Image (cartoon, rainbow, N blue to C red; front, side, top):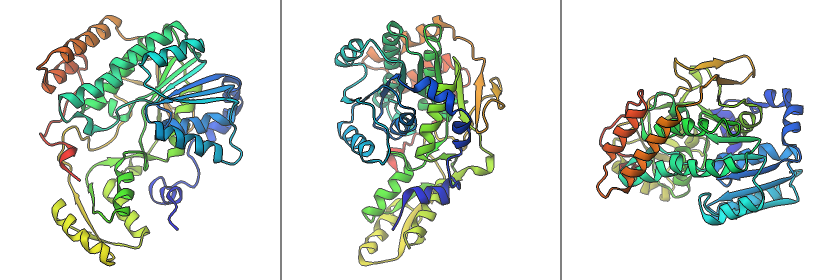
Length: 402
């Protein structure tokens, strides 16, 4: 029987246990001191990383846990999962709300509870494919940047002890709008760091997270559909469990305006075609390399007749915004590699120029209110703010591929 966690451990992370266990064990008393009996709000908590963060933080026995997500079905599954897990601590005050964090009803709930001690925000557009046209770009920037400010304004009225939200490795020297939006988001949250402590993390791909390419491999297998993957895009990977632990460690152990990232060696990067190949072998298939998506689709019909040759189309990446490799920090950022064993920490980040941040957000809002704003105009506004934003535009989106 195929077991996903074992597959990830054997073929992707190549670790029998979490790489962050040592730092959790070394800081167990500190974590307990800062989490036990605290009130916790997790926004976007039904997603892959948000739910893993919840599972990482619950053993330290918070007094209450409120989970907000727009995905009602995923919230139901989260509760079933937590309630069905042996020895999982669940506070008496546990409740999920299917709502948007910028909605009036969310604000009512938040104010009624007088805020929370610990707030984790995992609501984000995370895909490079979310920049296909001006409408997808606006939705991405609204969620990752403009809506984040609305939440921060509310938090400023009820300052939490800890505030955390997820960034991305793609924020370092960004080449796509998603990565640039997260880099801007870092400045937005850091501009509130004089009101309450803010921390974030740039980290690797989460193996088989919701919506990821590897998760898509599993869906294709179930439907006897071909696999497609880039052969030249290299990525670092963490397990779902590790993704939540990174966020917990950064949220609770981080100092104000710090950015955490996992410490990897370059040889630990993998390509997606290698993951697909290992997955097919694990399911008893041989790889049948095809020269195009259409050829792979045609040959996939034989799978329903019992064929053990699985059609794939592995090719070099040719879509906009696709970075060939991952990096977690830039040359100008100061990194502490001594505090924790498995995580590096970008330290001494200054409070951003609040006026520049304000002007940027105003320019984006004005542009989105125009009827004929283009994707290129938004990129220009972002480049004016981020001098190292070098957007890769090929004219082809991931929407054009399997």
